[in-house]
Length: 161
Ligand SMILES: *[C@@H]1O[C@H](CO)[C@@H](O)[C@H](O)[C@H]1NC(C)=O
Ligand SMILES: *[C@@H]1O[C@H](CO)[C@@H](O)[C@H](O)[C@H]1NC(C)=O
Ligand SMILES: *[C@@H]1O[C@H](CO)[C@@H](O)[C@H](O)[C@H]1NC(C)=O
Ligand SMILES: *[C@@H]1O[C@H](CO)[C@@H](O)[C@H](O)[C@H]1NC(C)=O
Ligand SMILES: *[C@@H]1O[C@H](CO)[C@@H](O)[C@H](O)[C@H]1NC(C)=O
Ligand SMILES: [Cu+2]
Image (tube, rainbow, N blue to C red; front, side, top):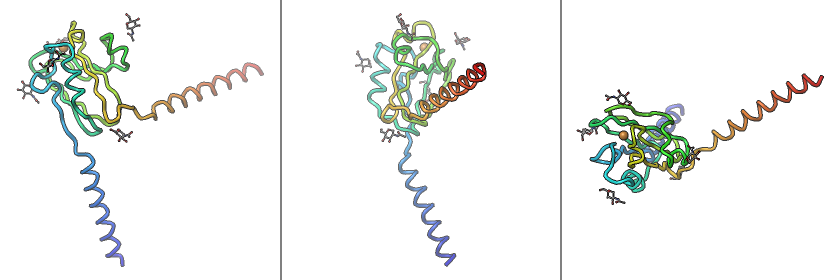
């Protein structure tokens, strides 16, 4: 009885590991292929490159700038991206290779903050999965707002007393 149960459990574990593995066949894409991550020949080069790919959770992109000093900044909004706003989370600096693995769906905006590289087209939009970020960030913000509203009203009541 126990033997049969553990056999069944063992089989289920093996089966689900197999399924998970199949579902997460991850790919690594070198940004810009042979060109790497540099100032491109035309300003839509990386946008075209990225739009031709289908990125899923578990996939990685590799920024290869071994021949030049480029950053990869992840900016938060489309407006910052369009403006080439030289800020955001710097995920890569200098002549190096960086691998960025996607752990959730969403739309990501990357740009190089060196000189006018971004203006010359060293930027790209990456859509992971359906491009929609999971909404757990929003509820936690809402929760924080609710909490601070609660604290605020508590303070207000305290002062009213
Ligand atoms: C940009 O350059 C790439 C590679 O040379 C080419 O495939 C693409 O058609 C060009 N796009 C435009 C808009 O010129
Ligand atoms: C980065 O690009 C250089 C020059 O093209 C190449 O020799 C090197 O193998 C690439 N590195 C990776 C990790 O792809
Ligand atoms: C983008 O640029 C416009 C025009 O210069 C400016 O009004 C706007 O505030 C900028 N937005 C961001 C997010 O930098
Ligand atoms: C790359 O550029 C940054 C920012 O301009 C600079 O601080 C750094 O020294 C440069 N690194 C190399 C290896 O050129
Ligand atoms: C991510 O996007 C894909 C569509 O490409 C969708 O099938 C999947 O359910 C999404 N995952 C999450 C966690 O929203
Ligand atoms: Cu650059």
